[in-house]
Image 1 (cartoon, helix red, strand yellow):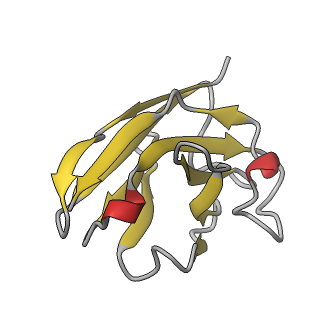
Image 2 (cartoon, helix red, strand yellow):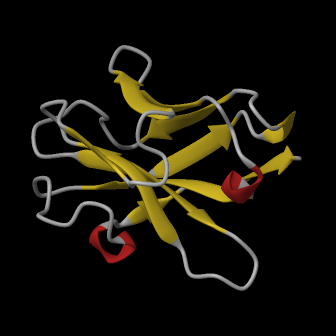
Image 3 (cartoon, one colour):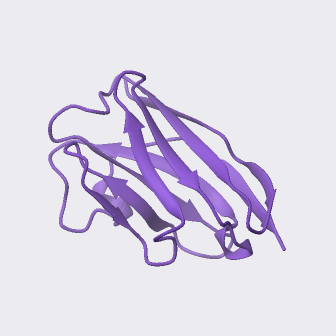
Length: 127
């Protein structure tokens, strides 16, 4: 079975940084056709795509985080990362990693494109 175990959330001041990790088992982060992403959900809002990465290393970011966040993976550790810099209060949310098979879709920030989800980790940015 596929498991995605997240870590790295927490409380940080505006302008600070955090790195989220997503360790996969039963799923190969670097296998051809596999793709992964990061999503977030604030109270009262729908889940939104933050960043996505294809098996070939192509990336896509939401405009709200472009230039501040970086998605990456370590195939040897079978782990996905999200480096979050210059954090803002509006980044406060529950963050989820997600994974799927079948090739990077045309809309990789759409949560319905993903089959497996991590447990979520809270990121809180104080002003």
